[in-house]
Image (cartoon, rainbow, N blue to C red; front, side, top):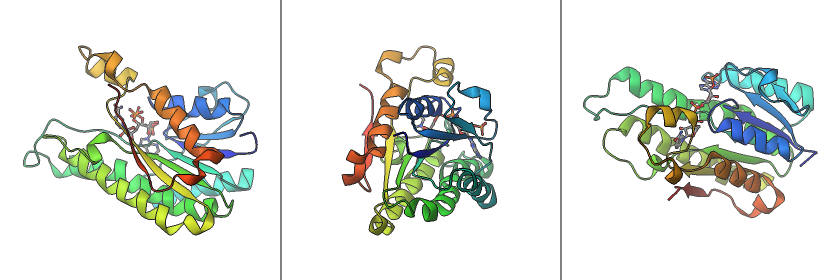
Length: 227
Ligand SMILES: NC(=O)c1ccc[n+]([C@@H]2O[C@H](COP(=O)([O-])OP(=O)(O)OC[C@H]3O[C@@H](n4cnc5c(N)ncnc54)[C@H](OP(=O)(O)O)[C@@H]3O)[C@@H](O)[C@H]2O)c1
């Protein structure tokens, strides 16, 4: 994928680190973004760090403008930004938590899509691969704000898939179950780590969807649940 320009959002997160590393190993140029990303986060000469806050429309637009100004194009958007809040029923969930879930899991997707889709359309074979959650389609008690925000982002991605297939652009969303990240090991030290989804598995699926073979998969909602 040496000729590809990839934007990974949440590039220094528990999953994003694996996604960034996997794209770097394909030989692609990888722009990693988060609010705190640094050039030294990845050793590869193909890695470029552009810090950005994509919780606003303007933050996402400035980011994509900087990518285009430097590389002239964007081929692939790998969106991993998101976050979890749980432990409260809907009645107990405060407005601030509900809004935070919407901002992180839904509004960030909306902003980056608005900024990136016009640029991705120009390549004729652009790719969007976004990370949702199993909770988007399988809500459980006490995770209502998170589930609702992820369900809505899945809907946005499927809509973008339909709206842009005329330009050869595909948009798909992966729904992981609990992943084996350092943060999860710390939060759930008694969990059975071996049954959790390996982040590298999700990263390799993202690479597959980004390659030419992924051309035939559009609007898919793909569970990756571990065992
Ligand atoms: N972990 C799991 O078990 C699990 C399961 C299912 C689905 N998921 C989903 O998988 C994705 C990755 O999860 P994770 O565990 O890797 O999360 P994580 O470690 O918390 O990483 C989140 C990343 O997003 C970045 N970020 C947050 N807000 C941002 C903003 N406003 N602008 C730009 N970047 C921002 C963070 O960096 P900064 O703070 O530096 O900005 C970080 O790089 C999320 O969408 C999550 O909902 C996770």
